[in-house]
Image (cartoon, rainbow, N blue to C red; front, side, top):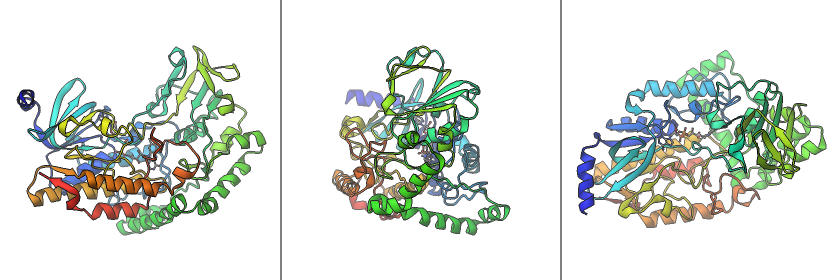
Length: 499
Ligand SMILES: Cc1cc2nc3c(=O)[nH]c(=O)nc-3n(C[C@H](O)[C@H](O)[C@H](O)COP(=O)(O)OP(=O)(O)OC[C@H]3O[C@@H](n4cnc5c(N)ncnc54)[C@H](O)[C@@H]3O)c2cc1C
């Protein structure tokens, strides 16, 4: 208690206490800020660990980076943009991100180069202390964590990894100053980012070695450059809305396949994916290597018209698990057959900690409860947003809020509806603290994992980044996105404690 009182004195010497601190400046953080302003809350501040704002599309500058959801839907529902093509590329997505940041004047509400290292709830003064590496701490009544599901890269600890003397980086930290042309390059991984990088660089490098742990199902991308009259529709508020609804409906029905019917998934996906392999690859050995041994949809489906063509190039070699990476050396990679592949560049396209590491820093809540302990079995949260014992903390893109069939922004906007309802109820009840009840969270989580049992992510026979170490699917929401929105809108005060 003495320590707690002393901490309050120390805290008071810290910076201004904000009503809300938002951690992360991607679309999640931006949407939180925009919604707070709409709610009449201006006393908030955004902390961003990079030295620039924007999140995913300002960070991922690797060759070929592009969205795989039609751009009009991968946008804020009320902020139209005259996209040049159906699946926007990184530079356009970055331009859109910066357009939102400028329009809502978010730059002046943000501090960059602020790596949050810990947050701690003080029961006595009912505020969060937000610790930042090498800087003074912040204090806030509420914290909105928007640190992103795919933001903290993971690089497996290959034997001898540090001995490699050439250049190496994760796809998330692509070094644009490095000239990869005419170099001997390895891409480790064959997921969504690798599938964009490989065809983008294959024709420019001396040799490209791709190390694939598991093949992915690939569907035709069928990208489309918008004509001038179509862009005129995109500029029109109502035209944009109608197009969004059409795209939304055309994607949403896929959930029926993911959840209820592998037969439907096979009709709408697997057949096309198998035809794509046969169309672009004639070599039966290579066909076999790129054909997954699990159900269509179990892992994120890749959209590409160019990946298989790249695999067929003379200067590209694909290594699968039959000839996997054994170790790394000064010169390159040694495969299981003891052949050393000399390299100039290794690109780690090895993904993110999207489940057990959803939050990139320690969180200490009521009664010194740590989120690490609470999530020891697996990450969980009411509407993926609130966790018992962690009052006034909202987690954007928290456990089980991901979607494979539509835009992540649809779910994030729904989370905002719930978060803003929490603020409104606090005002209505004239209270300062909101915490979800453990019973409500437990009922919700049990329901989610019961529903999950029917999905292809659970039954499809694959090991994917959707799964936590517990084996439970954590990254995905097992239902229609409109179901999540309905639950978010239908705020139940009785499921929360107000203090
Ligand atoms: C390459 C790639 C392609 C994708 N493609 C699609 C797609 O096609 N469709 C789709 O729906 N989704 C896609 N996604 C998912 C994407 O993450 C979401 O669509 C969306 O951008 C998430 O926004 P966010 O704000 O939650 O996270 P992010 O955009 O990742 O932003 C999180 C921010 O938090 C910051 N941060 C993290 N930790 C800290 C800390 N400790 N302190 C301070 N700041 C911190 C990060 O630096 C980052 O700026 C893709 C993701 C990646 C990486």
